[in-house]
Image (tube, rainbow, N blue to C red):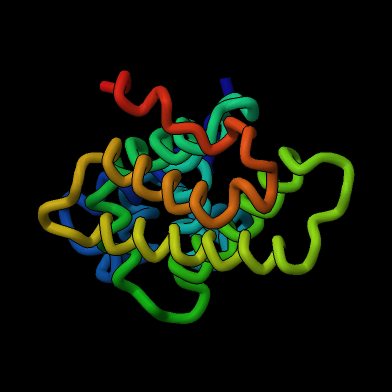
Length: 195
């Protein structure tokens, strides 16, 4: 079985985060931890921030991105919060960096793209009107800012509370406009049954 260098480096990054800050982890540290050559690293990643983004997308978001597309927004959001909670140490450190090509910029762009695709999928074959595109982007950025604040908090609310709040806020401002008053896509009915 072939070794997946991407996964090897991502797991090394996550392990090193428990020993030192993300900002102080060097490419050399990663190479020593994994035995990977410098050339092999740069054949796969532009720099450490590129690895951080890949780790977020493939280790943190992997479960979330593989959710059933028919899930309600609440279920998808709850899945996201549970998974980012499992990687809180890494994310808290990575989100504190505001340099060029940083994770924060990647998260915002990723969330906007994801939400637009998700809303389009549930809206049907018609193109989303400009106002709905604006509303989707607006709520994407607001959701990400709430998630970043939650990640960086020393005493965060439970994932279930955050997922329910975000879903209810989206329902208030988007559901009727996007999908009509009877649509269940923003339903939180199963929120009280979640563990």
